Length: 197
Image 1 (tube, rainbow, N blue to C red):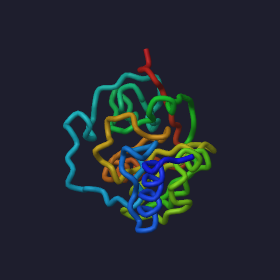
Image 2 (image 1 turned 30 degrees about the vertical axis):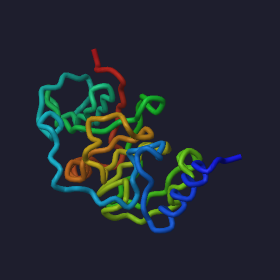
Image 3 (image 1 turned 180 degrees about the vertical axis):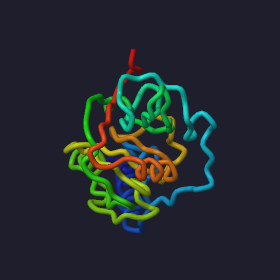
Image 4 (image 1 turned 30 degrees about the horizontal axis):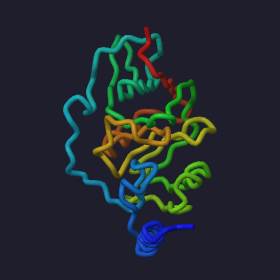
């Protein structure tokens, strides 16, 4: 049986949902997803997380996306030991993964349909949210194979460089729009926990 504090907590969450306020970080299991929050486009990424051309040795061909989750970087291989590097947010503990996939679909200002696994963890989430500035997927999304994972924008630019998501890779909206314009459907995506030797 719930005590008074338990009922108060449940009523607060229910009231927040009715009036469209997302529960606080302390009440959320996944603090990286904030439906309805409008991104602060004035937020300035730290210099090391900003998009930049870098020296990058890899055996992957130009045009390949390499995600280095331990480093919190996504690389778009350019060839000649160069790559465009973007700062990213990655999956939190228990939600990290690695593998080889391809971009199966792309969408501008995508709608958000939280997968059943996320709804089970966070039953207060909306079942559908139309694309737009308050959508947690941000300005663009690139879907990875037939998985629930995506490379997408975010309405939480302050989460770039952190491990906070449910397994997706997030970039600030300007960076995800830039990457989106550079890569076609079918692009190879390599997700690694550790750098290539």
